[in-house]
Length: 149
Image (cartoon, rainbow, N blue to C red; front, side, top):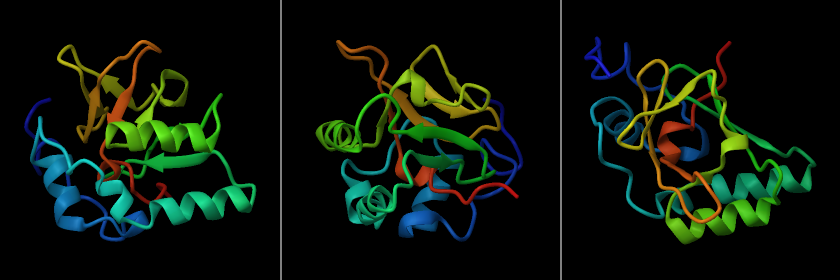
């Protein structure tokens, strides 16, 4: 990704990130970084798990995940699996873990080295395939944006 006005993006992350994700951590991971991640399990320290339970109880699944910079839809999960399976896999690997059918390929790219980025330059995480296929381990701070208006 070429250098842009704010690291790899044109601007910093949104101020009002979902799930109480930390702004400074998100900006560093999304825009000023190409290799590093939020710490393993960070997503469990946010309000994301409570949100998942509330969404399931209200029949509001799947969950939509938006770029923390642009608000573009990047992932939708769970798709073709239960919320429990999505959360178990994410817990096992330390980061929200998405499968091919959960990726919005209009806005997400996976580079040769496995890095996952948005088409506008946001660092998302990495593809770490397993026996079931591609597994995209994505930083929650990268997909905690409010939907674009």
